[in-house]
Image (cartoon, rainbow, N blue to C red; front, side, top):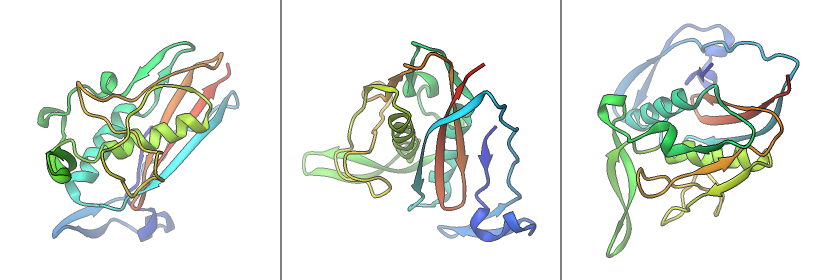
Length: 196
């Protein structure tokens, strides 16, 4: 289940109803958080990571939300290799992605531009840190051409469909599950081992 609260820091966790929030001049209505299913006793958290949402523009948050919805509750079997690009596919408008800020490589060096699916590198970077904290084997990871502010230097995972992927192998004896939690000011990804 995806916890897409976009709300915890503005009082929805205290029983307040939907509130109006402004992102880059556009108003968005934020509602009560979605409640997740209870985890069983045989499900154990083995790694997690949280990154701050420094750029909360509406289109970027949308793209992060779409990517999180695709990854949430995804189970990876023992020995199976996960591919971020393989799971999400090409980022298109038809899949719900919108144009948002991206880092573009130019002859004069990296510059800010706009691309469909901009912002999802925060999802891949948060996932990388959760996977690394869980001790799973990372088989492909790329750094951005310039530093990103939501993770420490060297802790990012840039993804570009058809060019740069983030991959890892489940080296545990049991299946692992990805859980995503998108809140108003942060993104958390947790890895659970299903010890059934």
